[in-house]
Image 1 (cartoon, rainbow over the protein chains, first blue to last red):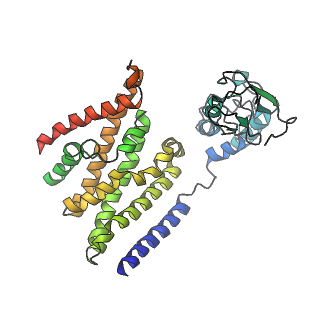
Image 2 (tube, chains in turn orange, green):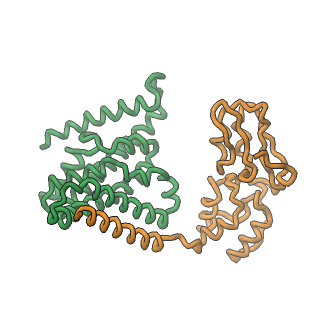
Length: 169
Length: 191
């Protein structure tokens, strides 16, 4: 009986302190990096030269990177970032790519050999499938970042305009 | 002072938890691919191990022993360690989100790192004082970090080396770990 009591008290104490700590350490979304991150398109396409949107946001916040390196976001993102950071609106740097309409990857499923290479390449886990089984793209999750195109050994991934396509799932 | 130095030398080198007592081998093999990750993992484990050793020692001394509840030691220590790991995770997520994403699943997995529980259990058997327990945990964690960093540095070089086909990957890593263990057994003479 005493044992049950001691363990319950210990668990209660730890639970309470963890609850307090989680509120204490909660990221409130107000830090500059997170505000910048929210304005970025979250394609995780790495076209800006950083591994994803958050590292790029951190680089902008640290004043290492200019705000015009995000082709998927385009002019709208540059304008929003300029407004947030109180900087001048500058045109997109063509070195990192040009603004294009939103794209969507589609796998030609008859040709897919199930090599899983595109699954590993996808930064947002939008491709489902398993080894030697057909893969497909979850179109709601696909950001059109094109990172799955180069690894595909049979070139069975097409990019279509996001507006015209229908979800296969 | 000499006591503390002896405890530190004993836990870091002579009775290194990974290479001599063979505890905590999963993170040793799992997170030692890259030097930076190994360093981060070592620091996180150091934090948890030291705290876990101190907390479990005091809980044992002030709650379990007086109430004659020694049989609850194992389960109580597991609960304490799990709570501490959770706390560390919250802390790291707040302080360095990047480190949090680098460590990924290995951070919560510190809970199941047998070195942590092993240190907590061994520390109450070998130590007579609170300070002793603290330095025992700290020394064990330093030993863990040292070995993890040495091993990951070696693995980075092995990745670039021309390894015979049958030994590629985990095989050569395990053999290297074996040799490291042999080398650390040599410190046994310092006893």
